[in-house]
Length: 385
Ligand code: AMP
Image (cartoon, rainbow, N blue to C red; front, side, top):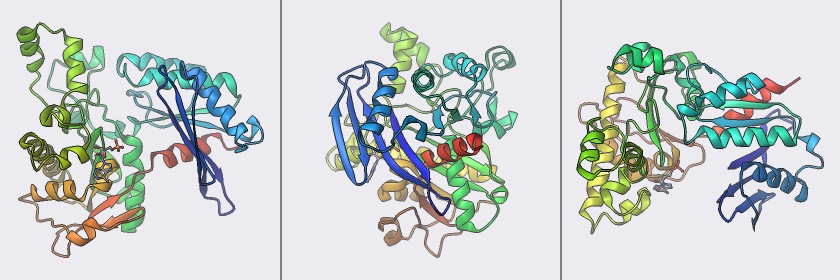
């Protein structure tokens, strides 16, 4: 459980006053809090999310980050799946809470811990809790892009469709790009590559999500740290027959043992894959395959935007930090005449940098995403009196 505490400073800007991380919940519990340039790490009893929420709140008092619980005016939660219902962030009423609970079937891995956290915070402090959904940004995608070519009843009866994820990040990047390009958000057309351990891409048309690579679940699309991304749907059946493994086990392998890890056999972490690529042919293969997959989506999305792309953006752990991966992707865009400036691509930066060369037909940026500030902004806007 990651957290950040914000306050509004004299300039009316949000300022992070403290941040931290609760790890190994259900295991041997570790809690880190960073405050005024100092970092405190302790072992804590974190048997569940309720206990973790209590530790978090008490630590804020213990370190005198807050004087009283009443200093906190609102709590924002990142919720991975909001289905079709939640097209924007919302205050968590009892009814909203029940709706989010119902979506557990769509996101069995992601929604339950978020629900546990909401419940815990609601029990400790009487302030509004706000749900900010990873799916909301993509609720603008049209039928032709969100439907799968399966019986239509799978959609009407079982909600099988593309939902897309990383929407909080895409919204932040779109807003930020509008400022860089000095144009209204409603006019921004871009292809955004959110490349982290989980990775996806988004075609943004007129400031809205037009298409995205993740689907019903975050398994579809790009080759990720441990997720396969796109594969032939028959592989499930074939492997079940070959190995005798059941569907749940195979789905788990596609989520946790595939992707960079599965191909390279070395690691899910891109840094390890690059580091081993000199001696390990499979690491080289993993790099080739993942960069080609990104390029494939990039070209398709540039086409979906009718070629009217204002910019290509790289973000998240890999997109922000790996000049080498950005270069591999751009090298694979053979029919789109874009080009990187190698010096700019390697240069250190704070929040964003232009990395394309003067020869490039469109600008390419690396932009550091900030999902927390989006959650904070929505929470503030929905809870301010
Ligand atoms: P995220 O899920 O956004 O935290 O991204 C995690 C991924 O970013 C991992 O595959 C890391 O290897 C990669 N990453 C983080 N920092 C760097 C870096 N400096 N160079 C290359 N890859 C990085």
